[in-house]
Image 1 (cartoon, rainbow, N blue to C red):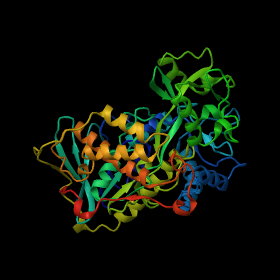
Image 2 (image 1 turned 180 degrees about the vertical axis):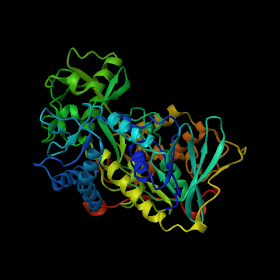
Image 3 (image 1 turned 135 degrees about the vertical axis):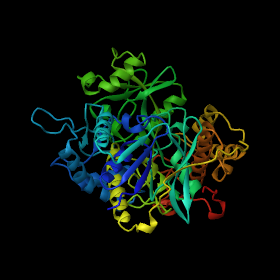
Length: 524
């Protein structure tokens, strides 16, 4: 078969899974706006959830996922996740990916919040992300079909005849290039860095969400952003993430006096769903009280959680008292670019995978450690779909002008607020708890900053930093509008003015955001 180019924007786990699946049959070009290790996948601590033990089953995993997602999940997508996840993961393991085992060779399965059984496979204790990414990059390095371009920022999706036909990128020196391909995959992650406190890499600001919207693709469930309850904090700054697996091994959330804070709040106590735990801790934060993870019950903490131990050590947090100071922070976007179960978006030629995509598997609140499984299952499914579609391409449709230079046009750049101001405004209004007054205030401020204008403005001549802040404003505006529209509380979306779920009006209802065709910017 003739090898046709596939462009992937982003260098995380979902991008590499797809690239490795396509290699050998197609040429794959991966573009990352910074270095290849600037993504969230390297930071994954807990592990990957899968029903691999004989006392577990995909059905139990399915039920836990729906319960955590407050039944807002796409049931068919969840079924695919838990069933295909086991098969696909076992193929990986057979190919060389290894996970922690005991002396008899049995998996050391972890326990995390809202899971009914131990089903979290981990590698290197709390270094699962590092181990998996190293494995994937080592595999990609063996293929001549995969090329990785670092420090090449994707700023726009190209579209021709109602189809996505590639991307426009900017290099560090401002050079503008166009890259055409039959298939383009968004794997840019979520948007955690819109907030002041986050577990995300500093590059994760919602670029893919903004680009897809500007290109006319539909977005969904943007109001559902998960806040991780236990970011490690020191002197008001985030030092890193304290995996939920710590609580799975027995750690307890306590107040300053050492009293458990989750007792009597939820039957699962410290392993309650993340939205519930985050709101409890947020209550202490508002009162300017510190919450701690008491790790006394974990005898081998340094060996079981070496990465987290080092985070504490580097931040100057002494563990002699067996306490880690924690606070909630933005963690994972359940919504994103609307896709089917093959990663196809509503814009032909454009796929979305990983956290950028709204596959429907997470519903209103992601079940812990389902994200790596989602990346594996749906990235492989997207690649398989592309391989099938590539068979239909005729010789006459093969593009010969794959790469081209674009003129760096000069244009007036509007005044933009600083990153810190954007993050401050978003954190206040789109945080763990929301209400109409705060959301309307944020929406009005974003309108004043020209957020809607950023949906269709010609930004080719803007510098990289201006484009990033433009994406931040646009993504936040879309999220705020969705959060304002959903007049209920469900999972990670909690409205103090509508504190209960509204089954009649909102059960299973998606809020779709899509730019009207007449407003689409010209990108050719």
